Image 1 (tube, rainbow, N blue to C red):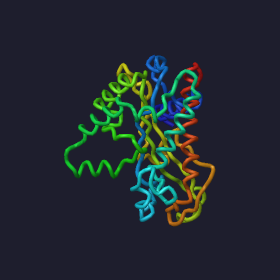
Image 2 (image 1 turned 90 degrees about the vertical axis):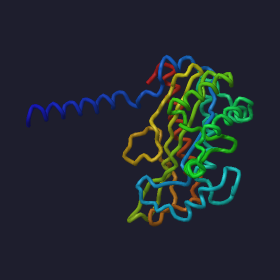
Image 3 (image 1 turned 45 degrees about the horizontal axis):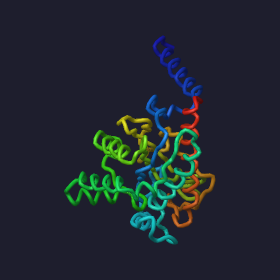
Image 4 (image 1 turned 120 degrees about the vertical axis):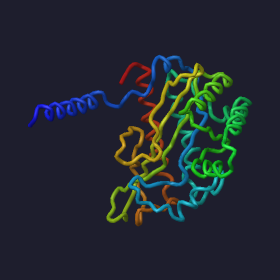
Length: 279
């Protein structure tokens, strides 16, 4: 074995051991995160419908049915892909992050009904592309809870970061949060795409302070493959039937909720530990 090859293997092994020793990568950006006491979740978005992490789903009629209604529509039907699940994520985030001792969560209902949020929404609408086809494409690809507004850039570019900074200042909070969701499933037991599947929703978080700094900026998760490492993509314990790579969404909402709650609890625990000086 050449000395160069041995060095490379040793480096990879050491890096793997380091990751194992460190556990989950750090979430918080300090000292910015230490300055936060009052925080509000102001934007949650997800892909429409439900996708397969295996890339086998043909996005057929069931997905089309699951993609068009808001969270207040078709309560008893198949529409939960993205729309109702984003609303569930809002409630879960508010409930779970209220347990993070150092952060006080301002309830989202209070936020979206405020004058500051309505002004924020108006500014976002004015920032949307004027081309109707582009706007239609944006609307088709992203779904949000009722009363939440689309944020161009989703807090990850300079313009949307500035918009969130201004919103934090106008709301009188120390920081605002944006939650991204990737609504997906993955086979649990299957042969040729037929068997059972688990929900495997991924979440990501961006937190912008009133000073214009990131306190959290996790990588995006939408479109990630099953091989992409993300500690906040938890598989559900429950499963649902899968035929030819497709699932019957109407019977599966609870397992997607389970996956989302697992993700948010894992994120809450990591942030709480880091705020308290633990890893």
